[in-house]
Length: 184
Image (cartoon, rainbow, N blue to C red):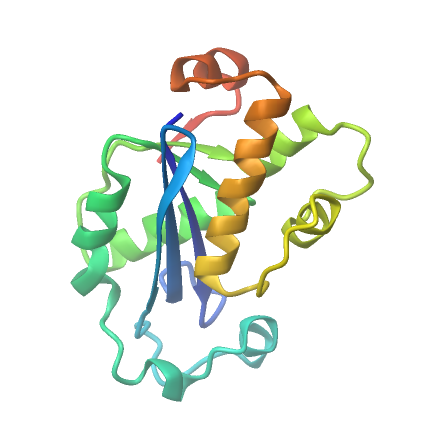
């Protein structure tokens, strides 16, 4: 089982306004690396107060941070050739597309899957499928709405879901979740 979990935090409601990204790499069903980058968004120094209230990242936290285009190649290398999983993947895939478009960068051919869909298939009896609720259900402690922590919890929940569904390879994921796997 090889995949990467990704999570973005944004400065505003613009999809290109990533201010933090976290990537968690899973190889052979083991988390091997989690990395987080603060990002100076195109809107800098403007941040929406609503977004700040969610993640706590302030403009001064990113004033010396790289822009997305300066870190993309490192992120892309971590993700190369693997399935991308995100919790509420349409948001994270949209932010990734928005950032790539903003900087005029090529969008790679990446398959992605939403861990909410995976959780619903695995634990169809739960009342809620938010990352916080799933982490509580599985007794995983984390700093919610920080990209590295969220990406790692997404990876852990995905691994638990694959185990519950008796999936042990990327080919089996494709067979079982084929209608839910999207292209970036």
